[in-house]
Image (tube, rainbow, N blue to C red):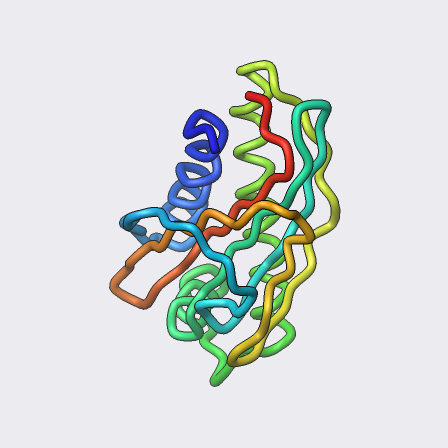
Length: 157
């Protein structure tokens, strides 16, 4: 996968969380992820399609980080992942993808985004519906971990 296509998603996630939730993320080492089980507790998944590629992006948060983000954004900390937290994860997924889309459009890559879907629960799975393995990038913060997964069938960039 081309780093010029992946980096806008990474920088957009870090920017959204630092701006909206005063939460600094530190990216870790990318790796291939072949299994479907998520590495966190709540995930936003969004499909994307363009003339150059089709695929999907997911953003997964450990519960501790999701609850911290909720508290910083809305001033309330729920006891566990609830409907408000899953709504927030969907909105973050939208904002991150929208930010990356703006960066990519400036480089000549235009794509359409689907409505994000949110899945939660210990051991939930993420199905990218692509033949290619997903690239997963972990992020550390003082409140827990986040993960971005990106999977594309064709990436002609």
